[in-house]
Image (cartoon, rainbow, N blue to C red; front, side, top):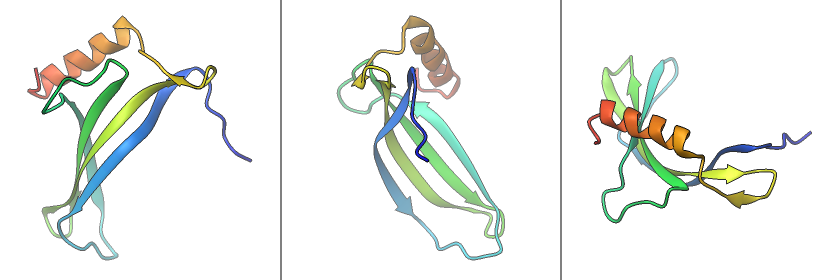
Length: 101
């Protein structure tokens, strides 16, 4: 059965992956994400960017990098939306912690 979204949550708009090195079994990857500010024009309040890296324990290197755009989405109304001032403040604080302020 399909899982149906409800309320306000996130949906993936786009993702770009840069595979730096091949990964083979057995290996363990550590994947880290952080929200970032738009490099060019500011994103609408309904969107935000996330950068990620995958670290290989076997190779002791970053093996993949990604850049994604996430959209706040109201699954009940089937439209993109603003998550509200409280959630936007949480994202702003997180970006400041990551040096993105």
